Length: 156
Image (cartoon, rainbow, N blue to C red):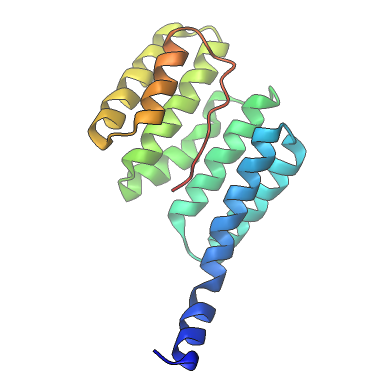
């Protein structure tokens, strides 16, 4: 492969890589507790994902926003509707499971343990099917009462 062909491939895919990196940067800020910057980066990631016509990444950014809002104690139970609908539309079991986990934490914090348990069981079934071991460990911790958990979004 010559330089010109390699450069063409790089240039054609550079923006998609940048979109992917924005999500990681947003998640890093969220994990560090810099929630305002995380929110800005997730919004930037959402916009870039829209420009790239990447519906999966749009859903990831929306789920990230949900998690930031939860950590800022500004979340609402209906915040998850849009990312969940996207994940269902594209058939992303990873996305559906992680949205259920996020919702379950929120329902637990709202005092609705029954709904949280139902969502966690649904998420657990999907995670077992997909061999998502870290998500399974997270579900177990939540079921054991650790609802202050940082829900890590690997966003792959």
